[in-house]
Image (cartoon, rainbow, N blue to C red):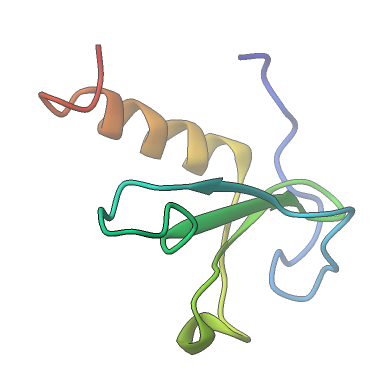
Length: 83
């Protein structure tokens, strides 16, 4: 994964740029789209993470590229999730 510059603005004040890419599944049940997380770039750098459930509306978590890269590394190190 190529390095990305640190955000140049307040991530929560900056608008989302483009569409969210949704990753779905993992919760089991009959509907594979029941549990989805969306990721989109934020103007000035960084990303916004949202859920697709009605109770998630209006809420998001934002972080820099380095923060999401650290999250990825932590998840990859969990037995049964990562390599």
